[in-house]
Length: 382
Image (cartoon, rainbow, N blue to C red; front, side):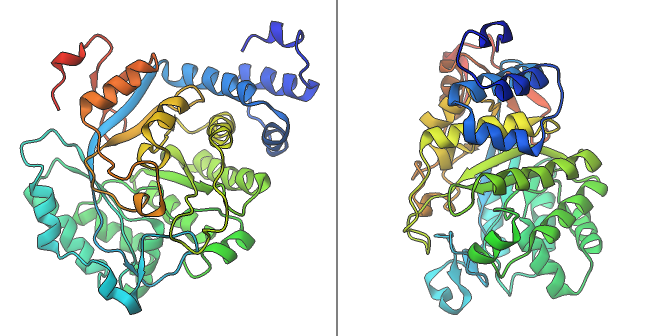
């Protein structure tokens, strides 16, 4: 953003001051973040967010070759926004995969250049700490180099409490079994009153943050998410990001932040209208501006849709997740744009190149595997 040109437009002095801080690499305050939500145009925050993206990662847009395993959609919890889970009392309506069945999914990708398996699902009372440790061991025995990113803080909280072990002891047990990193799910919105209304029976904000902080201390990186566009307001979004920013200051253990758009199909919050794409993009941009200590900002394309994910690349986003191969149902069941979430490598590369960005295949920890800057699409192997 060219500050010299700002004065020629009708822009509030507060916005000019925020732009000045951002360009000088200074951290914005909660109040300034809130001011951006309430008073800044989409173009204004998009320009600032892109400036930050450019400084952090240039024109690179990252993706990886991954697939998901969802062990079960049977869950002891009843989150208002969830269209995915089936209550344990009605478990005949859901699915429960055995270790052998999940290992079969892994084996389908033998001899393919997949680098990550992402494992999340419902909280099933019979799938305990030992069960999941055995699953991780089985995967690592079969394919030692495959990075296992597994289980949300909600799943960890339940399995550790059920096993009567501390967070640290439980995580160490799973790390020894093969756990490599932790996804960001289950964060929703940290505000206690909002959480009480939408997901009262699962781990609270303090517990979520403790699990991620402990993982970071043990050398296990993680991601962070925020579910937005439901009953929360802008203050709740800023408060959520502040707690993440403070934890990242202490540990530097988060890889990326992933804003997740609330979808209203087939859940107990279906009466709440979904946010507009303008609101979505503004949230991405302000997240990029506010979370100055997060190296990456991800748009999860199966939830947002590939065209909107492509659009988000102009609002601070530098990662659009991975190939996924139609192995996740969590967002498609809630009415996400992508009902068959699968993209080949060449489709992802094309999507990124169309946005005039440089596609870079990464591993889970953002080590670069292949830069497609000069690779013609005809030479890309799926």
